[in-house]
Amino acid sequence: MSTALIYESQSKKLILRGVLDRDTLLPLWRQRDKLLVNKTEINVTHLKEVDPAGLACLIHLRAYQYQQGVELKISGTSSRLKKLMALYNLTTIMLGDAGTQHISLL
Image 1: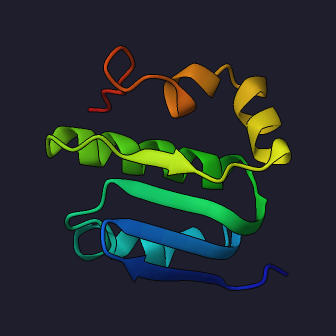
Image 2 (image 1 turned 90 degrees about the vertical axis):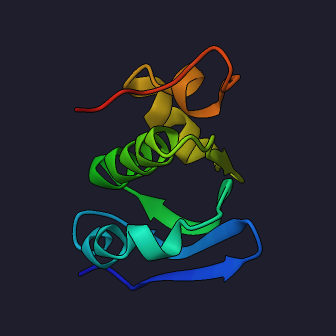
């Protein structure tokens, strides 16, 4: 059983706390329009766990903002999250230079 995912809005930053996994991401996804208004950063420092579905959610959030003309930075990545990104060959896309890397999801 997963623990809760808590999100907090601070200026241009969305802070995620708890667990981002297949059991907790749906409320975040459903509120993305409202939560991502004027956001240029998602801070994941306080996430205890991220599974592949949670990583996919972060990818889609970045792509969603990119389609709105906004570069969304992911900050505070743990070594475990970086390893998960590397496993799927996503490190450059998720943490690299936004000017050279973007995601297009149809």
